[in-house]
Length: 204
Image (cartoon, rainbow, N blue to C red; front, side, top):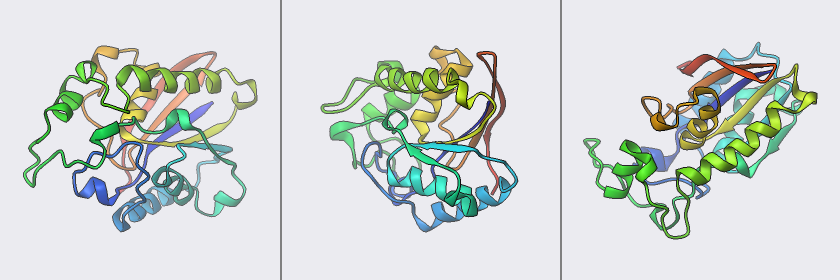
């Protein structure tokens, strides 16, 4: 099994530095462009199936990456790979024009995520690790996917949570940084062993 795990393209809230998790924000024009460029670069990859977060920005990214293949490659939404839910923090601005983090909660989220307290009506790192692991375990042990090439379209925090199943390094959750928009992580899974072939690769 070969997995192509991609973060969605840029949204307006990404550009405005707003907290964006479970709120369903579509791609901005720049996000469409990045997804299309990524699709062009991956046009020869023989995808058999796609799993995507049900949020529009991920679904649209998946379909743009698949391009003409979108009509014949099954695209299956799965809430387990949806972005972390920031609850009452959703939509608040967390960075200024110079990139300085304005919110103490979000500063903790990005610098020491295990200490990020679950917001009211939201999730924490343990929550997203649990549901993405459930997805991961189900798919990598699915005999029908053993020889397939799989596209997974998700989100920054959810991608890092999924990849913890490869890194096996929970203390270093971000693995250096949040994945870039339309960054692609390629993972081979053979006999239950996952190997990272490419990390946060961009094609633009």
